[in-house]
Length: 418
Ligand code: GTR
Image (cartoon, rainbow, N blue to C red; front, side):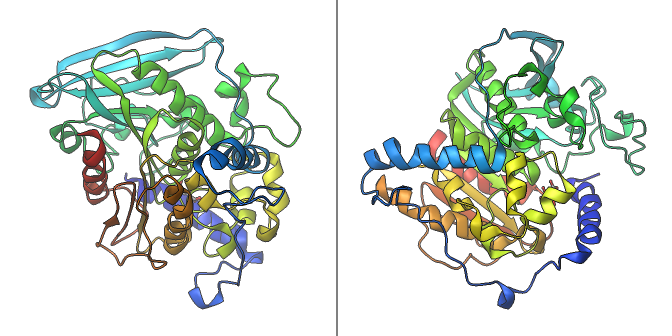
């Protein structure tokens, strides 16, 4: 099954639940809105330099996303150990070494990193890192990749019942993870099953890594699943920094859809991510929420009550009261390279709104002297646009991550990592 079908299950649910709140997919009905000023502090001071941005405005915006959107991410101070679970030196017909590394947290919590490194690499290699939807065994039809035992959403098509992955999921995400292509371009690939970190359902918290942080409970600001997934991505970098095959100064984090939201939030908080890529992340990710085009805050909070901090529910149907918008999430990544991608038929995620976050983050990149994307119009489908530090494309087609998307990410990463 591709991610597309998987997402469709949620999409139909969302449309049904939102009967009471019409979903707008008509550009002419996007209301007039004013974005929160990126370069003005909450006390009204103009932000004129990188120093002003880094000392005053950036921390302010980061705090607002913690308080009002994703919740607070706790620190790291806990014992963690790494255990190699399996090694195959002749994976992909001898082209790669495949390892699986268990990141063991206290209380028997863990996440398993599946790591491919090209065998013809000379020295340390840059790496793409992203969470996956169906388990590490879904990347390849290879019986040696251990089947995830973590919670999985039941799925008739894949024969998943009782929330446990089955053999049918082996290789089920191959179209989304063109492993050989990525390796052939000189990159390693690291991935983790997202439900190792937080099982993606409303009652997932008790089985998630969040139980390791019983004190992380400022009322209304408790972190949601997106915060936990982002935290897991940072723990993966902790590991990659110890791996002699990997150039941990060159980690490109990426994610599709809900995992694109997590990638952006991870990239915003943790400067070790050298490139941040959002694939069809939509509402609560790259899309400007004030446009109220496609999915809205009320819909996402209703369908996925566990994704965000409780505080985010205050903004159901009140987008204009949210003290941030998502161009500011992208701006938190500056001056590191950032890439946003949409799909032409993925109106639910608001392609135009996804582009506009990138466009409106431009002033911060300009503060750093970086060239920005300066057209307010999203580029047409299949015509990627980029500067060295900002990239965008709209793939023809639906909500998914496919080879075409990866080709653009590799090209963009090459400019910095090669
Ligand atoms: C949708 C959800 C989106 C997006 C997507 C996915 O149903 O409304 O925000 O995250 O799921 O993750 O595939």
